[in-house]
Length: 168
Image 1 (cartoon, rainbow, N blue to C red):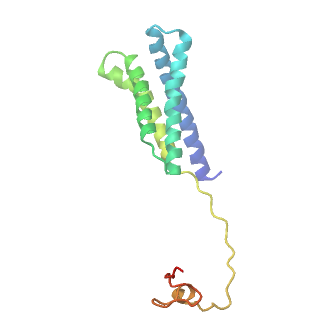
Image 2 (image 1 turned 180 degrees about the horizontal axis):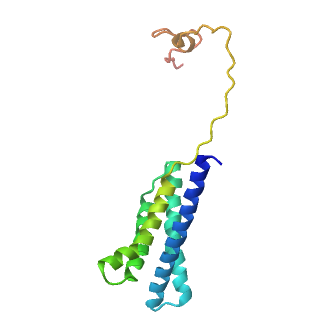
């Protein structure tokens, strides 16, 4: 295997490990917070899926819109909102101390950073197909554009009206 393929494989393994662990922590915290505030267990998981996967989807949507040259304003605001919801769930479930909040925020922040890096990387561009150049034997002389298209200023073409017609 080449060095590039090994690096790509290592990046993929790291991406999956961080994404899996951060996702599991974020899902669990959102679920637990939802249940702790009176919702049934299945709604806890529904909230976790909605909040965490919305952030990923919105990141993908921003990338697609940028490629298409479309505005991303509202989608960007929604992404920030869902990221804040996820981060808030992490911190709310933490020990009530600065370090507790920082440690609890790490999975969510790592996951968001990972999504940002992956989505902001340039897509692979296929190399263009080789073009066969056919040599031209002799260039043809170019005619001046003005004489080929329009008569000189002030000249009226005899087959055309000068724009003045007499009504009878």
